[in-house]
Length: 141
Image: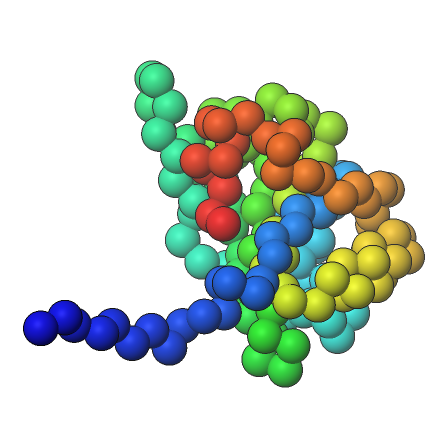
């Protein structure tokens, strides 16, 4: 007799991952406060993102927000951690905004919102193909 397995969590099948690299000289507290005041986000700080390196552990400041209305998951990571960057290929970025969503139009509108903030100097869409394997292991996809 064969067994059937029922899975109710199919959200990952339709969702896509996007990464926005953000350049901003603001502290993480001021940056997140400004993002939350836009009305598009409500980030909360969670435990630091930990990554093991050859010599010691690295920790990166980490914020999360889930938008129930659009079923979009946001993760904001400060690129500079306790012992370096998330990835050498991201050295020009101060923050990484990871977005998991079904709505690809949302990405362009968020880029515009971010670009209009005074504390943001630049926003770039980063392809997962540009990331090293080490960086992919660190980022919480």
